[in-house]
Length: 125
Image 1 (cartoon, rainbow, N blue to C red):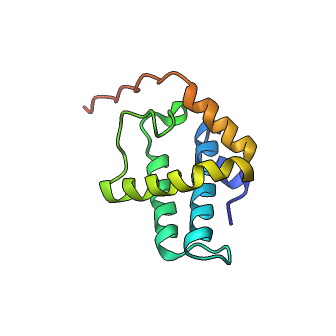
Image 2 (cartoon, rainbow, N blue to C red):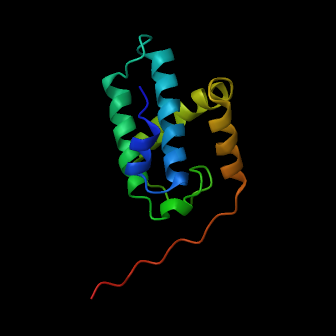
């Protein structure tokens, strides 16, 4: 099952990435339930994708000004995982509007925001 809001906020210091994580996690759960495990648990493949997405979101160079994945100029997923997450998003995205309407609407609003400038990395000494 999806993690609680307090755990998500601890993992992701800001609201934007916490909300992005909740959206990704909800999509993966919906996809896995409809394709692999109707009992609600994640299969091994979907759990690995969820862990991978969590790791990539934690390492996002944009931080909490992160754009939605569709607008992001950085491809942070490896090609195989990028294709898996696309498949999940294509399937679960439209269905999520009926199951998690507020989360979906907030995600659509985030899609419309202007792309932030990539923060500069500090030069190592």
